[in-house]
Amino acid sequence: MTELRKRGGGGDPDGAENISDKEADGEDRLGLSGEAEGEADIDSKAETPDLPPSTDTDNTPQCLNKALEGLPPRYFLICVNYFFYGETVADYFGALVQREEPLQFLARYHRFISFTLYLAGFCMFVLSLVKKHYRLQFYMFAWTHVTLLIVVTQSHLVIQNLFEGMIWFIVPISIVICNDIMAYLFGFFFGRTPLIKLSPKKTWEGFIGGFFSTVVFGFILAYLLSQFQYFVCPVGYNSESNRFTVECEPTEIFVMQEYTLPTVVQNVVRWKTVNLYPFQIHSIFLSAFASLIGPFGGFFASGFKRAFKIKDFANTIPGHGGIMDRFDCQYLMATFTHVYIASFIRGPNPSKVLQQLLVLQPEQQLSIFHTLHSHLRERGMLPPAGAHAE
Image (tube, rainbow, N blue to C red; front, side, top):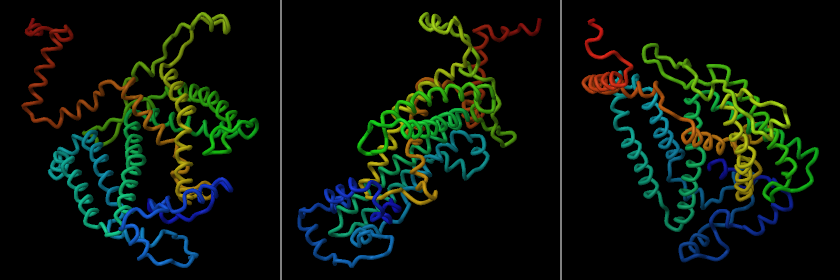
């Protein structure tokens, strides 16, 4: 939000069409309507002097700066990051946490500490409220929470996907990039029919061409990566060596299997069966989402920038805007990937279960050992008691 405030008077990204937006919106983009809404707004306008045009890049209205000056910058960002990544550390580094007394305290009361930090920020916000600027302050307070939900929460899901295996990170990112490139190429050479008003340069030809290209690309990439253990194994933490490991017995979705083709397909290609990695089938659904729904993340970002009359979110990458300008579709894709894994893929993770067992008290671990031992005997996976003495 800081960047948006700084660039509030930035360039016009869409020419004449965007100018009409400015005429329609006026001061509404700051939460100020043309009609006064109560005595507080009237007083606010009366006490805010007309400022001469400035050549400085910061065109934030003086009243907005005054309303926000009491709230510490990035406080809520720190709170949310502490909560999410603290959960990850406690989940995947349980054995390491148990070795250090301070970390044990932080892990045990992590959620209480996180909530306390948030309450501190909440109280600081309330204490910073300035008379006659309440509406502007609550406006920015709401946008802060929306931004945290869209950016920080989804970036946390990217980390979670990484722990499931590098393939769940590389394939979704790659297919979004492929779709972006191929949609541009098809639109450039064959585009004739506009797709959506928010992005006038997007065409149906590019949208459809990008879809089929992305499905083919994702299918091939999934085949290549599924052959390597490094990409398919979930990330585990070895408490003895204090290192991450990516060694495992690949699950069934990364083991080549034979599939019988439908009769219609058999008549066309003259094949009855085909050998595929099951993950290649999953890649079709990931590619379809990246092609059909993923672009709406870009449309959302375009609408957001129109609302604030800016061309780019930042200037981090010369000629391409900021990081968010390049990742506006990636965050939506990361969320879908996380939901897809949780709904259709994820099973028990032995490494994660072991980490949880190691943080238990010795008597609890012994109780679980005896229970598991008896269960394996009943299933015939261990010899009956006394059989080893014969």
